[in-house]
Length: 313
Ligand SMILES: [Zn+2]
Image 1 (spheres, rainbow, N blue to C red):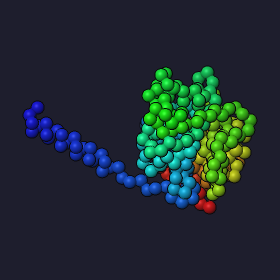
Image 2: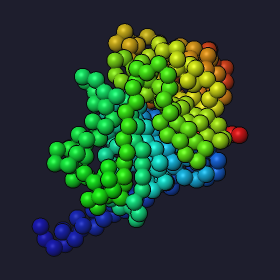
Image 3: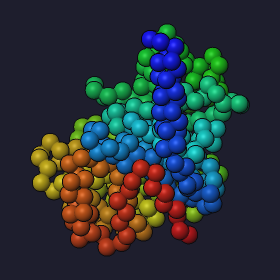
Image 4: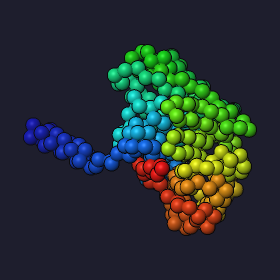
């Protein structure tokens, strides 16, 4: 390659990098005051939806204090939202499908670059033969000498250059009653097992002085205790993963739109937010939302990546 050609290819490379940066339009900040739910990802496990997978943050007075789920793509959305790791007190993982947990190591890696040590509680379900418990997952990711990312072994004790002290806890996804998993500054978070086929899975209820947010992860809607768990929420978020004509296996894993609508009608939140769209449910999105509206007569928002929904009182 001649010197001129080499220079030309360098200029092209630099200008392409510049274009990439220019395309990163600033994202308006969510939750500067009060409490707000922000979706990081609104998609599912297949990249054909062109959305990040599941993940949401709760903003409290301008700080992203709570993260629920960290599916693929949420690492980027987390950064775009303006959330800061040093503000984060609680991470809840609903279950160990990749579209709810794959970006957790990427987000926690930021703990290497914090200025000061910071404590964080990380909660997830108990395991079974096919899925690890939260504590086991954490060890398999970050365990000294044996984890997939063993180089981050200091994450549990804020050592080895890491500034995060991550305390993990497992919640029995089969327990009959909700379990309180975190309390602080007037906020109480509880978790309840939900029937996502046979995958140990948790839903989270976040009670704040400004109102209540309930985040259901994937579920088929067959557990009546969930309706009580979600009752009185200001915002209830539920997945819109499948159509009403989905096959039996899909229905074992996920709630169809009529089931989502019935649950929302019974739990009666002030607002229903839909997430976890997939290529197949996006094709008929308007129709599916229409079916849900046939049961639930309050406001329904079909979420997008980075949708910001403030609590209005
Ligand atoms: Zn799932």
